[in-house]
Structures are given as structure tokens and as C-alpha cells.
Image (spheres, rainbow, N blue to C red):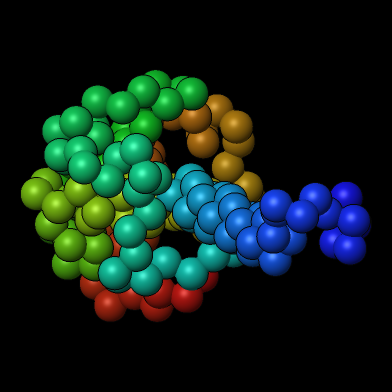
Length: 152
């Protein structure tokens, strides 16, 4: 519909403003989803709240029970043990993910980002590696730095 031919009872400026807002919200939702899944080259800040709107009022326990396409949505952080103090180091980076739902989402995003990185030999992870519910292959001194650079 042309702006000058719009019906008289519709304000074209409001319609276009609404479309721009919807587009911005969709782009923001896509960015949050990609960041949470560890794909793309997106910054991850220590204050980021990556939870979608439908998870904003959920507790940590509720979020850990959300089903995703390949099992539980927050499976990496839920299955992360504390070998070599990994769990404690991650808490220093993203916050207390056992109590703070936003920190749980940040922690999962951080682990997903690590999981999508090439290994020490430069080899990309296989689809099977990415679908598994564990980090696998993380040893002493690997992966989680207590003073991260948040920009991807």
C-alpha cells in the first residue's frame, strides 16, 4: 500500500513505526538465540540476559527442564561437573548459575561458544560432538578463563 493512498482512518507513520519495532524485536530475538546457541560472532557481556521472553519469569530449576531439539535446552551447564574447578571458574565468569536464571543462560551460551570452537589441532567439531550433552575433552587449564574477553 502506498503511503499517500492509505485509508484516512489509518496513520501510515504509526503502521511503519510498528513494523520497524517488530523488525527490531525479531532481530534482537534472533541475535539472542544465536548467542545462546553459541553460533555466529556475537559479543557476550557479563550482564547479558539471553533468555527469551517466555523464560523471563522461570526459576533455574524450571529452565533446566526445558526441552530443546536435542534433549534439554540447558544440557551443557546442567551436566558440567567441577573437575579442575571448572564449575567454580564458570561461576566467576557468568555469575551464580545455580541461583540466577540469567546467569544460567549466560553460562550455557559461554559453554556453547567453547563447544563450537575448533579443537587444538584446528579441527572443527562434528555434528555429533555438537549434539552431545557434554563438553568432552576439557582438561586442566582448558576453556574457561576467569578473566574473559567478552567480545567474541
